[in-house]
Length: 140
Image (cartoon, rainbow, N blue to C red; front, side, top):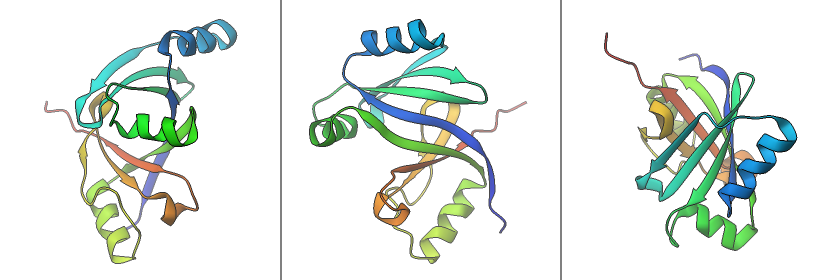
């Protein structure tokens, strides 16, 4: 299988104060909020701000045991993850498993914005939490 990387889909930023974060990105860079979504499976609320063909994703924890809250408690606010949009996510994950890559998710699961997602553990990427995503096909 040839891996098809389409683009950087988004950069996820762990935040404590969505109002202050949105004000910064809007006031100083002119970015506009286009989508907000709760992702209960990750105990997070997401805020999307497009930048060209990619997006800034602000991540607000909605629970004290959210992975984002645990990240903030350990490391503070800042860059949480990099998301790459790919084709054939399931096949890519199977290949990575065969190659010995440490995955957080062995199979795709629902994510925000109509994507299926899976995370690669930072110990396999040189310290970066990597999200792989694939846009769900819409039925015609």
